Image: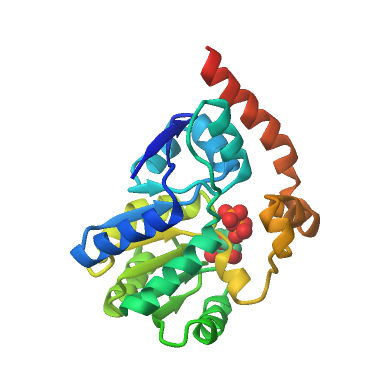
Length: 244
Ligand code: UDP
């Protein structure tokens, strides 16, 4: 996989089809793989926290989930040409899992959401094996966490979707995912379960294609308005990283 660094975070610049092909081979061979889906906010967090930077760079692959990352790559003379949103990538992974018979576990979101997402995904991917679900409001260490790890292990998933929001999901995956023997691929997917459950709607296709889904989500959820400040700060830091 081709990679380039943006604000010291390694980001994959390969096409989605190449990534899926490589992941399929890794799952078949049983190679443990971790995928994160960083956006500009996460790169800024990593820029401010060496510990989070280490976590992001410890993954097998970081896919570029955000138009800001494409602009940054262009500024740095890089090769990231396509934005791969976490949720679209996850849908491609689900199609692959259905085709190959890989077992998927859905972890995260409020009580009942992962179950609802499972039900809706079963209509989209009828042969998909969703071997278990669990909500995301559990203690992330200690007994409750151990119990959850046992529950996940006993359902023998090949792929683990972790939808706890960032940076909780990246920290949780790094600490826990490799302890579940059957899991070959873990991926952090933010609010994807809310979308599949129908709790949150995605932007119309034309807005997605224009790369403006972040604007749509900000209008719907004003708590996301911080993104208006994040983007100029992010691009300034990228510019700085090139010139100083
Ligand atoms: N969440 C969770 N456990 C937590 C905190 C958050 O399961 O301890 C869930 C929350 O319910 C939501 C998701 O994580 O479903 C975060 O969604 P958001 O869209 O904010 O994530 P982002 O993609 O912006 O990181």
